[in-house]
Length: 273
Ligand SMILES: C[S@@+](CC[C@H](N)C(=O)[O-])C[C@H]1O[C@@H](n2cnc3c(N)ncnc32)[C@H](O)[C@@H]1O
View: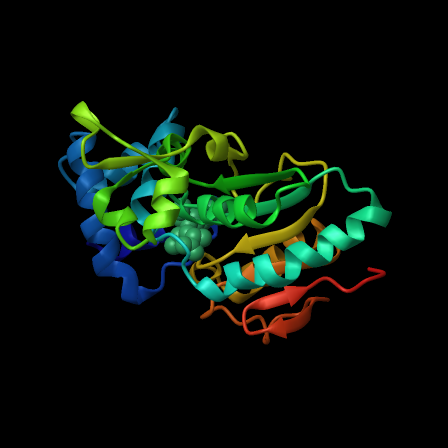
């Protein structure tokens, strides 16, 4: 891959998604673009760069971001967040809802990837919030991964790590052509709204604030000013006293924000802000 090609792709990806591809990502970019070259029938990377500059390249730009971004995720990743949600955030907000008159407990899974995160939240809430309605909004920049998330279908291998009770309660076993797959039951899927959203562009399509926001394992791909902008954007969407969960490798200590540290990777919006 030529320097000029890498710089072009790097700048374009940054402009569109704010994903920051350092020089160490050159090999990875080159490998991942191989797929796009084959899919678009483009002989060389130089041709592919020209294709991305041609009028009407918007769809291919979407595919480029898809190919570059990392979607790795799994059910109940960083389990301490789900324990905190069940044992602290839910009871606390349920208590406050009596005076605040919040109609629903609201959670946002920002950068939800293929859905394991919002469905893990849904399973946690289904087990701990029987009498207060709840709603989860889930967003990602990738159309392809959102379609997978909305379908809610996972392989045996993905589901195998879950306790048997969880699988029995919240999944339907596939049969016929779906043998070996498991689908999240409709009662849970209906509680999760999936939306396309670039976290750094425009305003999210939600009016009501959230009690909890999960934004995990995406900030690592952004540079510091972008991380700071994102944390402040997310904080504006929380109710006072609401919680932000970030990935355990994504400490916010070096950023300027008004949130309080509660535990590693758990932050709270102060009351009165
Ligand atoms: C590694 S996954 C994390 C999934 C999940 N939050 C977790 O912790 O398991 C990162 C996700 O961030 C999404 N993403 C990357 N840049 C984004 C942006 N600017 N706006 C919204 N989503 C973005 C990717 O498409 C990918 O699905």
